[in-house]
Image 1 (spheres, rainbow, N blue to C red):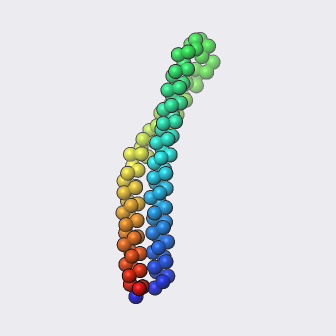
Image 2: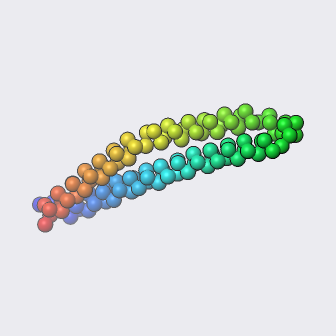
Image 3: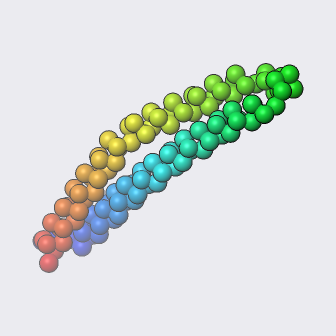
Amino acid sequence: MARTDDVETAYFALLRAREEVTSLQRWEEYLRAERARIDAFVAAGRELDGSVDRRLRRALGHNDGPLGEVLEQRRRLLADELHRLPERVEAAERFVAACEAEHDALKRRSA
């Protein structure tokens, strides 16, 4: 017979595991939204560039290169994180299934 403390401990582990899956899903939403935001920013900047005389843009042009590099680095980081995320979600979901099985087994033993 399982102790009530063991059942409760397993239950709270299950809740934390489910929270992890939810957090990873939110993280994916954030990453995709951030990528879209950066893409929209870059596209809007290109659109604006064409509407102003290049000579007048020179005052801001000195930081176009560094800004582009930073944005490209951010894009690479987002892509890397999005690439690894499915594996993390799968692992978290497997852990939830294991926690559910353990919790169910302990509940049956305590009944």
